[in-house]
Each structure stands twice: as C-alpha cells, then as structure tokens.
Image (tube, rainbow, N blue to C red):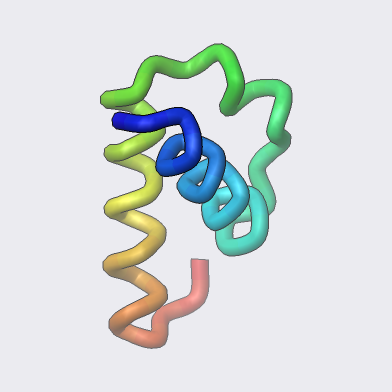
Length: 49
C-alpha cells in the first residue's frame, strides 16, 4: 500500500474507532488494513463501534 493510502486509513481508524495514532504507527500494513476493513464494514452497515 502507498504511504498516502496508509495515512488515510489511519486517519479513518482514528476517527471511527477512537484508536491512538501512536499505536497504529507500529502496526503492519496487513494489521492496518484489517482494522480499516472491519471499521469500514461497520460504518457502511450504520452500526456503532
């Protein structure tokens, strides 16, 4: 994934799940993508986190 894509995913995760940016910075791309996909799926369904 590109740096910009990773940055956008981290920003989305911060806003939607309230996670700390510092903890996200040390995760792998795969971990970020998994968290992003789960948060995005929930937001599409209109469910709370």
